[in-house]
Figure 1: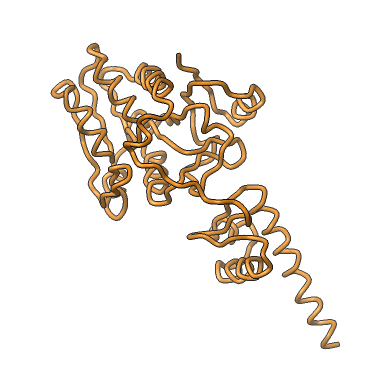
Figure 2: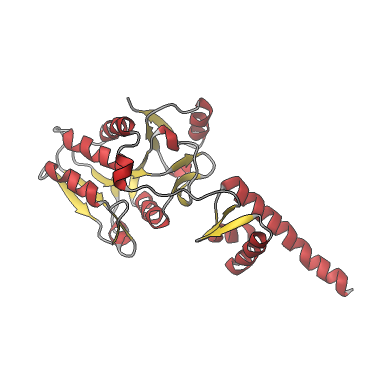
Length: 269
């Protein structure tokens, strides 16, 4: 009788861990909090399951969740190094994205070199006036300075990250939570129909998610090399974004899969 009870107790654990492993492999990264909700168990139980899976050599535990073993987390490039990568594509994206802004709009502009291209393109649009731009990027704010006083530029504040010259929590989200802007331009490291819009750096992903919730229209800005990729931190599901502004060659099936989830793709040239 005792052996039967132990077997009954063990069976759900085996099933749960099998499902947990499958989700980690399918998604590339799974948060403890998401697994807890989806499996209907406590975060403590999820962490215990992850410890067992890691001991078995199936996964690698990382901050906030787990990844399949053999997957190396993306390494974040510095802002300056990224400037030289896909520079023409980023410039085209910047111009196409800036074309979505009208005089009198309020704008959230994320960090990164693609966002910098948007900033330069906004400044170049001499027809724009009375535009309020809120950013958590020091480089972005400086790039927008030539547009003063046509533009009003607001910096979120927060803790400085040197690689991207970005401001993150604590405090970066305090201002964002009190705003509701017309349009947000959000950069990323990956856009995948299933995994969603993701970013390498978790603190920045958290702020990007706040930007998503603080805006009426949501635009992801990413060159074609990032479409179909998955990174560590989830910003939001594809269905939470309205538009992808991109440049480069993307497989038609990927564009169709994104469209099925409500994301319109605009190609810049």
